[in-house]
Image (cartoon, rainbow, N blue to C red):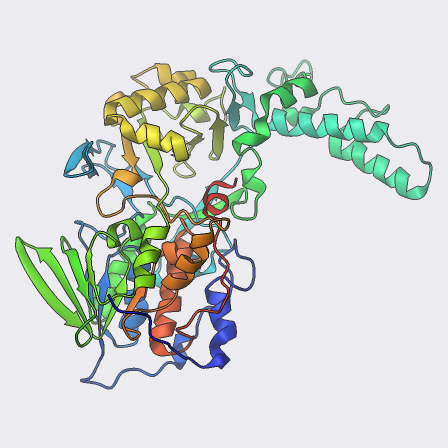
Length: 547
């Protein structure tokens, strides 16, 4: 192993560097200045630098896009049979693989049997409006978008012991009854007669929908006891008591996540599935630029000791070695550290060991009837929450009023994901159906939601992925050094790491694209190749789970 050699870069690029690496501006947003690659000079014809890009995830494809259109000769080596990495959309006929119980050989877990026009996003599933890079690439690549609904007031929450199975509380009851009770409590403390107190009292009456005496006895905001009728106007639903609401601890189950800046009530999604972005990137780089994508090419070693960068990989039953001027690695850190790495610094190898990838599972269902849109449920998009291990339940934000649809029947993290991942695929579906039936009793009808049309994925067991995202923790003393290390190139500025794993937005496509732009800017000399003395480590739990 070599030791780190010093690197210097122009200070004039420091502000751009900070904006790109999340060191300035809102850490949780992905906002910040993107580099102006138009100012970069194109390579001299016949002497175009070569770049090996390891992994065709969103970060690797973005790097290939930016370098390719500048004239660099890029080869992308991808071990799987498709591009996209964790940006995966399940469709009819897709085969899903995970490592066996010993973490060794991949085994087939599902062959997706959805109807041919249905799909489900197993990885990223939404795009916030402030993820400006993702939105711009969609515009540039011609990827049409549609609204993704994060929350509706018809969504529900189930809490064991507080909401009966199949009879969860509606979002609107929780939100408005809580607001009403709190407004009444606060209004009762107001004794002054000055103008400011009068305005506050008036605000609370409107905010909580209080009666003339300042009491809260329920509100039509929470819904009606029965449907509208021409003979009588129905009464508002009886309010949940403050004691009931407090005992349920509903706020501990991500109830307020949709109002967080990271999410919002309405976001975006590509029409036809999240993999439309990956398909568009792949098509553009291979048809318009000097970029080659080799699938089923599994990298086994990287060597920095000679000229350029040497990479050995397996493809078509052969072991091949190739070299390039630069190497950009989009390989997930848990996979990268398993490779044979020669000529890397001790600090870099320590960084690979410092951070784990988070476990996470998803479950998808095809429903033969869109029961959630019926007269009883009236749910059109959004997410329902539960204390069951499935954690959350997503409704589709597309193809409303069509006969069938797909549902995300689980998206969990931490211990719940670890435990679900240990189960056989069929047992995961049994567990997920149990959780879904607490929210919707229609899951007791296997003709409505057939068991054979369910799919599951435990990302921490998926070959070449081994987790959902880098589990960065600002309170871990070793993470700052590791995060900073990944922002700097190795081997005399020849080897770079990209992906959301090396960005202020772990778990988000915006982070992967930001990282790719940042590395391309480093290669071009537009930003420093040396990180500042202090970097801000992302809080992965907050940025991915809202906790």
